[in-house]
Length: 252
Length: 324
Image (cartoon, rainbow over all chains, first blue to last red; front, side, top):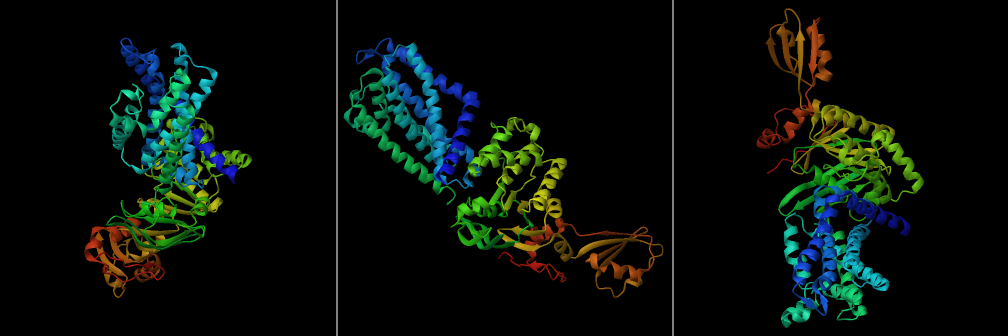
C-alpha cells in the first residue's frame, strides 16, 4: 500500500515539475526578480553601505535567496485557488489517493520549483565571488529545503481555505511582505527598535536568512543547529495546517 | 448501483439538493435533466465524494459516500463539467498521471492507456500538448481518462456542453459504447433534451433540488398526453371520431386533419380502424422538451401539481413535490 501512495505522490510531483519547465514565462519572471534585487538594489545601495565588513551586495545575497524561495513557494501554493476554479484539482481530489498525500505531492512540487530557482542564484553567487564552500553549499540546500517546504505549505494552506483570486493580494500584503521585511533579509535585526525585534523572532524566515548568512558568508548570529531546528519546527507546523486544510476541503 | 435517500445539501439558507431519492440500476444510463441551478452538479459532487451532504445518505456501488469515500472513489470515473485535463501536459501524460493516481501497475497502465486512446480515437495526437486540442478532443481525452481504471459507475456532468453537433454525435457514440461494451453504469446530467432522449434508459427531471418526475423517455412523453396525429384523407368525416375519449382536439388545415391525441402510440390502431382507409398518416410524439417544460417551466410552478389531465402511465412514478 505504501508503494502505491508513493506512486501517487510521484505522479503529482512529476506534473508540477513538468509544468514548471513548460511555463517559460513563470521561470523567466522568477529569475529576473532576484537579479533586479541583487544588481539594482544590492549594487545601488552597496555603493554607499557596507555591513559586517562585507559589501552590501554580498551581505544581502542570502536575503535575496530567501526572498526568491519565499515568493516562489507561497505563490505556488496559492495557485491551488486557480486550479480549484478550473475543475482541475477535482480530478486529483476524487482519486483514491488520500488528501494528505495529495498535499505532500503538491508540496514537494513547490519545493522542487524553489530548488531549481535557487540553483540559478547559486550560479550568480559564483559570479559575485561569494565565498561558498562545498560544505556550506550542502548546508545551504538543507536550509532552502526547509524554508521552501514551510512556505509552500503556508501557500497551500491559504490556497485551500481562500476561494477568490483577489485573495492573492491579501496574502501578499498580510503574509508574504511582512514575512520578508521582518526577516532581516535586507538589514541586520539589531538595527531595529526592540518591539520590532520581537516580530522578527517569530518570523521563520529570520532563521532561514541567518542560517544562509552562516553557510554562505560565515556571518550568522545564531548557530546553524538552532536556525535549522527552529525552521524544522515551523516546517512541521506549516505542513500540519496545510494538510489539515486539504483534508477539510469539500466538507464545507 | 447508485442509491440516494433524502440526500440534502444546503449552502447557508439555500437548499441546492432537497431530500433527493434516486435509484440507478446496474448497467443503466440514467439522465438527470434540469435547468441551470437545478441541483444536478451538486448532486454529482456529493456522489463523487467531492462535497459532503448536509443530511441524508447515498451509496455508490454499495459504498457509503461519506464513510467509505476511498471505496467509492475506486469505483467511479468522472467527466467534469469544466475542462479538467492539463493543458501543458500531452494527452498521454494526462492519462499516465491518472493511472498512477489510481495505483495501476506499470504493465497494465501501458496497455490500458493504449486501449483507451484507441477507443476515443486519439492515438495519433496522444503526444501533443492538450493546449493544441479542440474542445471535442479534450472531451474525448477526459472520457478516456475517466474509464482508464475500469470504473463500475461513470459520472458525466454535461458531457457535450458547448460542443458542435458533429462532436456531440461523436461523444454520444462513445458513451453508448462504454455502456454496451464496458458494461458501465452511467449517470449523466444535461439540459439538452435530445441528448437525454437518445442516450438515457431512464430520466429524472430535477428542479429546485427535487426529482419532479422519473421514467423512461417514452413513458415520460406518453404520460404528458398531447401527441399530434396528422391525417390526410379526402372527405374526412369528423363524426366518425365521436366517442373516442383519447381524441382531445380536431383541426382542419387544407386537406390535413390535425388531431390532438392522448398517447397516440397505443391508440393509433383504434383511431385508424374508426376512420377507415386514408391517404397518409403522420404521428408526432410529444418531445422531451414538452416534458421538461411541464415540470420545470413557469406554468407548472404557477399552477401547482394539477396540470389538468389524468392519463398518467402506470409505470411512470410521479412525485408531486410542488414548491410552497
